[in-house]
Image (tube, rainbow over all chains, first blue to last red; front, side):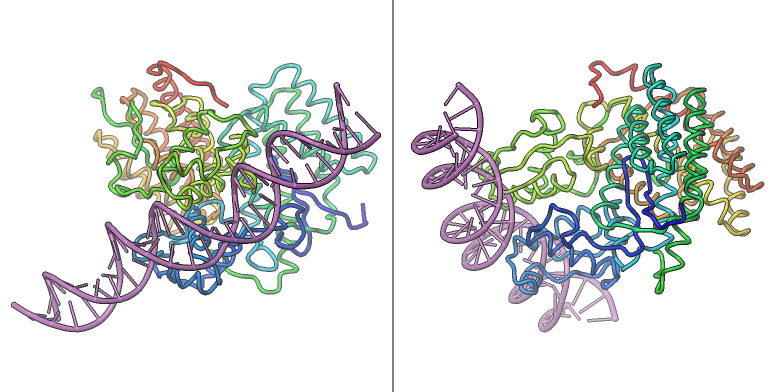
Length: 271
Length: 271
DNA sequence: TATTCCATATTGGTATTACCAAATTGGCCC
DNA sequence: GGGCCAATTTGGTAATACCAATATGGAATA
């Protein structure tokens, strides 16, 4: 485990491969979206400018006709782009002009563009992201324990034991772990948490990809997590399971934070 | 405290007045939005039809031209409406047609329309909503304790003591409590949680309003909460504070759930 | 009969033009 | 200087036209 390898963050429904440098998916990164629409392009450019603070809060955006001229497009495309940004609650469109609103009052959907704003994501923001994901995952786990059937309980334990064995053989278990946590989400059956997870996943996936070096604590922390999960599920002990997840995410956050900080040259301020 | 009164749910940034019957805001309920745009109207109608399951997953939506004819509008308005629904990830628009996706894969922004779908909101969904809000509020509280200054700590305690006094005089403290929890969110300064809260707030506010009867446990549970918060903040004990919030939300969830269940005639299934 | 392939019709994506209503703006009047 | 009114700007919508990508259905093929 000394060789550098990919560090995966296993979340509710999120498996993000963390890399040293982040790259936007507007490249040929993701197979789909090779042919973005004009309105999507315009929305992306305007969104970036807004998030970079090139407009003051309350300030008016250029008129649709001006924007159409600037992007050499029709007003229709510009209107669709503005409509999308309005749905993020970053602007407010009214007859007379569109005005900028505060990022702090916007939608969670701006998280992705915000993370992808700079070459490297803001360590603090990533940390907050992981912290939030941690508590939601814990909620899923607790809830799953209270509602799962005997069969489900048994199946989960079997999967955990398989992962523990695999880990003992120095195999990667990240995908299995991610799937396992997804299963907890399925069993817990909390639509609200699932929808939030969908948004966070979308934001993280569509915008950025991480790579990271292997940290030394990976193997042992994973083993602790797996054993804790197994214990908690076998005993139907929500506190135990939750604690295991919390400790795991705690270590993960620390590792990712230090990784991002250490290689960040120009750190930007967090809103 | 025997008289019926409004029961307020105090959340991170959400103060929702819960009523027996829910009402959509398309009436003159909220002062703003008295003049909804055509595209917004179309989006609302289509969104409702989709959420009601009038289209199967994978099925094709009528073409933009057909929809334009149906709503007696131009294609532009229809396109904007579809673009908005696509942002909810409820449909996928491609040349050839727009296809329905699963609600379970959509955005958190569908929560509001989902809650407002029937005359009365789904008790299970509301319960999940409150459960989720509970853990996020607890996270805010824990975080706030770790980062707050001495001055902030003192100010928070003073406000809590004021609320405790007010409660002893049978006064309503719901607004103050809501503001207090908002302050915890401000201090904790977790943008991710804040953005999620924004979305949940928007969904709850813009779509529905609750009224409810006063439950007997309100006064004592509020008092327990206030004292627990005071204790936790004074001792900088995150566990204590979190536990107080958890217990409060637990009682709140139970009360709201029973209230909604008892008066629900036709309960609909949860996805 | 089942499969593959291709021409055709359908559909979304965009640009253009025009008109209306609401908000902004600037100048005028008090 | 402050308030009022008209001209301008701006968003909201409709209608039309054209292109490219997809879907569709029938014909040719195995």
